[in-house]
Length: 235
Image (tube, rainbow, N blue to C red; front, top):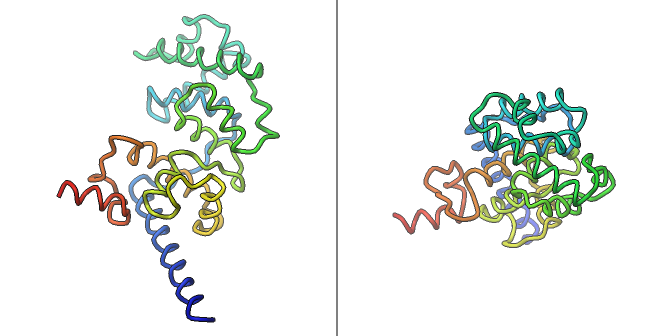
């Protein structure tokens, strides 16, 4: 091995070690995520929309109630606001969540004429993500739903995940999803893809947000070039 190859090899090894350290820090903070029960992409979206109003366990219960009380998601779409709200449960936000769900399902129907979103089965992750973003739903919700829906070998590169990797310096700013995926294939330990993708996505959606972010409480601040720079500004 030549001197240049040795230097490149050492740099790559350090990069992998830094990435592994970042994942460990996120795991210590949030625990190790586990895949939920297999559902359709629409069901994952409903769960994520419910989670905007309630804790995760409550959101899953709401999803299960709706699945039990209605024949399919088209019936939810055409049912009255009172019927959907009653199925959700006696929460202060039930009516507001029912309205949000009905509006999203209606946009879904208008856009795709298919509330099973069967087109996604034969589309690439990027084409599916682009299509779902036309529903005018928070990209973090779309990305989170797709992470749980996709197979381990075809996990999507979400906007939140990309932002965290860029700020940590693993990929260049505005790197393409394909380039980001290639980098992750180099960095992620085989068999732990879902854990890494989910932790990075959730960190991007909850802490390392696009604007108005605060690096002080971030568990990755000692590893993050952007974090160090931001903290230096504030002393």
